[in-house]
Length: 162
Image (cartoon, rainbow, N blue to C red; front, side, top):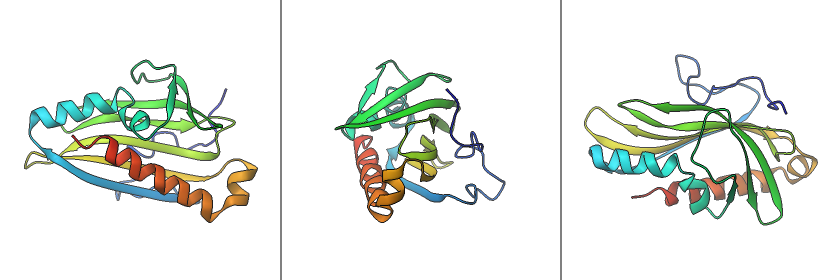
């Protein structure tokens, strides 16, 4: 199954100015988790084991840790959300991953879940995404669908607070 968008990896790399691709709704949220190596590693491990998704109330199948190239299905109530992990990052400053939408996903685009450590040792959890409606009900729902996305994002951010 193919991804439903072309800008693979743009939530992680993007242009030099950090902008997300044109033609999509953008989301970029960041919360401070604390500071230090232990906080960074603990939050990174949570992100790479689907902690944000599970903490937000989604079921992840298969339930293995995040692996680049893996297809996963997230479920929330009756909603089926197929995704592919397109990138995994692990460096001294960032731990996380991005997944992209597959056919059947309500949206079309990509979302990244990153634990970032600043030069002063501060640790943040960041979510970056670009999306547009991918299914008829997401198009029809318009602002309601966007509101649901923001609600789930808040739940993701709260789930990783350590």
